[in-house]
Length: 487
Image (cartoon, rainbow, N blue to C red; front, side, top):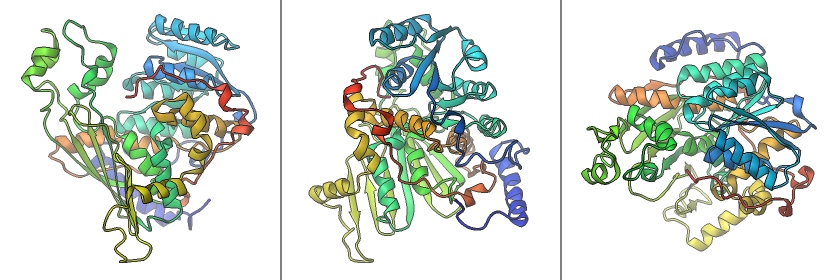
């Protein structure tokens, strides 16, 4: 639905001029002024799969991909028809698991470093579910689009601005959605904040904060171990890059609540980080690293411990996004939304709201009892409806299963997916842009408008739901999934 008047020629030219400046400042190419073939993909309905069984092929079935296989196998109307990984053992293990669960199909196996190309080009699937290491997310998604298949891509889905543009243009050209699998959008507090916002409890939202603060030093090999696969693809990013290489867990839920690309958009950012102090301790080098480990060098990593990025939106809102995976501190995504009437934050959950301006009721956090009442009263209807089943399955408290239920429900019922390729691009490109800002002494960097001005014409994400009865799903047909690591 339109939020107001459409973009006329004058508005388009004004936007085109801005994008030329943004392209130079942000480092992206200048040939991005018109929509790809077919036009915008915002609110696009992929009717090809409506009222049909959805055939899914998985690319990358390590810990995260294996968890996805387990979850998706429990969703009615979805068939797992292909499994792809460079490691034949992972394929074999997942096939054995499915057989042990008496899964009615035997998925086709694709094994090898480039086996995903055959799956995307020739595999008899409708959806490609990508859970590979980060560097392969964009190539797999792009290949899937070119092969006529809908990509569902784990985070972060692209690592550069140009990679993001390539996915935008391919999605538009082939008229196929491309969705980033940001599970934190479906967390209880993130959905609560969305519902509070749509009920007007924040007033006008003016500021938000999100983060990925997670002590991941445990992925470092212990004494005597050679480098494991997670070190290769995850910690290796910290060694080679600065900036925020994993912005989406804290940021995408904020984007959904604030209406980024749907009534507002990112304008520019500044990014700052400290040094790699926590991976530079002598005891770390002595006790945890083998003699041939490149992290013995000084400094052992390019990336600082804490990266803080401030984003300004066109409508004047500010967003703080942080990333720290090497400090000894409790896990947090922060989840803070602040408006003219009140505030919510998580870890732990706290809230405060005014009933009328200057009534001072928001000068202190609500009591635990009153905060619990807010949490219950404004619980998102999808969480209220699905949480019991989702928690039974698990996966980050159930939000992983809700995410998979929701994309399946949308495709089965002819609904637009909750997150589109523009959401993917706007958040994924921050990997490159935050590094540019850090390396330039924290200078401002413009964020491209991947919607080419269409953000003005799209309504913010609404309060959505899943009809479990319509899907044919009940609590008795699901089981606990203990396969995935909570990283």
